[in-house]
Length: 172
Image (tube, rainbow, N blue to C red; front, side, top):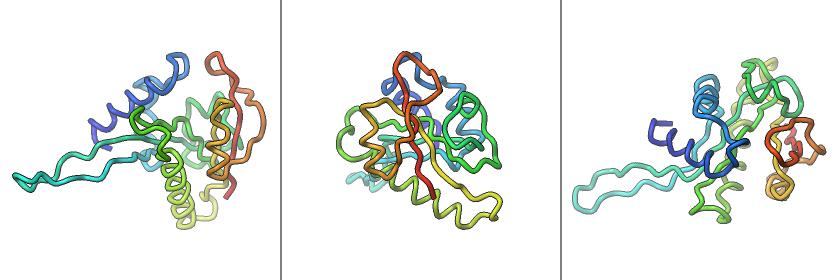
């Protein structure tokens, strides 16, 4: 992800979550630095300029960012640390530009993300294979994640902001 896309992802994070829930610049940069293969951007297709036939910049419209942990659900520790040998992919953010929400972007992005994780895991040593994807979300977003195949595990023990969070997992 280039620096412009990274800055756009930070804006999506700030717009998509209340201040007490959004990742800071430092946290987002940490996650991209320690787990770059777990940072996926969704872009509008590139277009060509008619007058000069040059490729224009791709426009980021959404992203997913994760780290690895050993716990089967998101924990306070997994929100702050990355364990390179972890078997659980912990999704921290799924953000879509306001202009592209409710158009299936998040669903497509999550389906592609899971497909890539499954393919990457199949090529790993047996001791490094992913076992699951975990995330926590607010109640109104549970149907979105269930549509992609996540299973609701119940109310999360993590306190992050003012609203309740719910744990969901996708088992490989």
